Amino acid sequence: MSGEKEKTSAPSSSPYVEFCKGVNGLDKVILRESRGSSAEVYLYGAHVTSWKNDHGEELLFLSSKAVFKPPKAIRGGIPICFPQFGGLGTLDQHGFARNRLWSIDDDPPPFPTNTLSKAFVDLILKTSEEDSKNWPHSFEYRLRIALGPGGDLMLTSRIRNTNSEGKPFSFTFAYHTYFSVSDISEVRVEGLETLDYLDNLQNKERFTEQGDALTFESEVDKIYLSTPTKIAIIDHEKKRTFVVRKDGLPDAVVWNPWDKKAKAMADFGDDEYKYMLCVEAAAIEKPITLKPGEEWKGRLELSAVPSSYCSGQLDPQRVLLGS
Ligand SMILES: O=P(O)(O)OC[C@H]1O[C@H](O)[C@H](O)[C@@H](O)[C@@H]1O
Image (cartoon, rainbow, N blue to C red; front, side, top):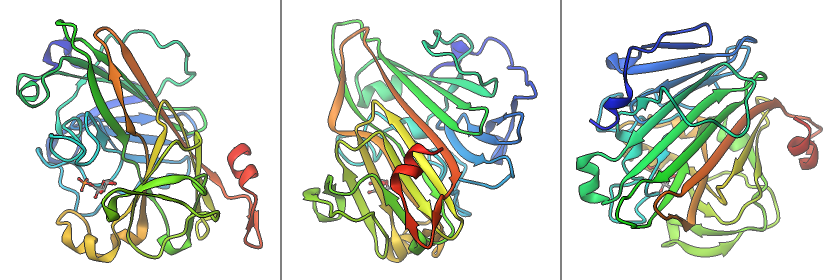
């Protein structure tokens, strides 16, 4: 199994980082921030399955039918799509990172920016013999998952080309975040209006979004191109706004399977589409290419703030700037 060499000793827990077992005895890490927020990460897939605010409220959607058993990816939370998004290549849907066993990275290279947080974990995935048969490249993928002092969830991916023969490689990528929402019909997304998108439901044809914030009344599966670095997901019923900030990730996928596709998915409840929305920070239209020795960085920062709106009038500037 890849990455076993990194595991020199059993990691020791602290008040901020607890190493334990999750469903089916899979290794899990719980991050806790002193004001009460928390996150849970499975080493299987480097998959964040839970993110709670300081009131203990769950902010991510995880299906009640999620399967915690390799080789199936966990349905919900934040799957990592690498080195391929969707079916855009020869690999299995969304690549292999989401269904590999990652290791704890005991000695990650330093980060240029110091986070104040003590609640973080560093994970690593390296090329395995099996994966190199389908994707003949050598890579090191380091992922830091951190909870900020205010409960923000930060994921930083650093992917390095370690090919020894001078071969570049290209990949597409997404943080496939499933947000928990009170009722999909009460949700709107701001920051994607007037942008071009590829519609996965119409052979990836290119369209331009209209001027209004996005609302949802049927299946949606769109790849928005060259989006702003901030996107807001406003849950009117919960009076909660998620703010997605991303860096190095120009695109954003918006997905909800709606009723028919929900029924067709074995690991997804028939009605659960009402309670989730995927907004995925991604690099899809223009694949990332790395020469040997080069590193790419892609960062996602999620925060959940009370919606600042009254009488249904939302000022997007306040939502995006006022957190
Ligand atoms: O079922 P999965 O392989 O996890 O994929 C779930 C979904 O992921 C993305 O959002 C894609 O755009 C969708 O087309 C796909 O259905």
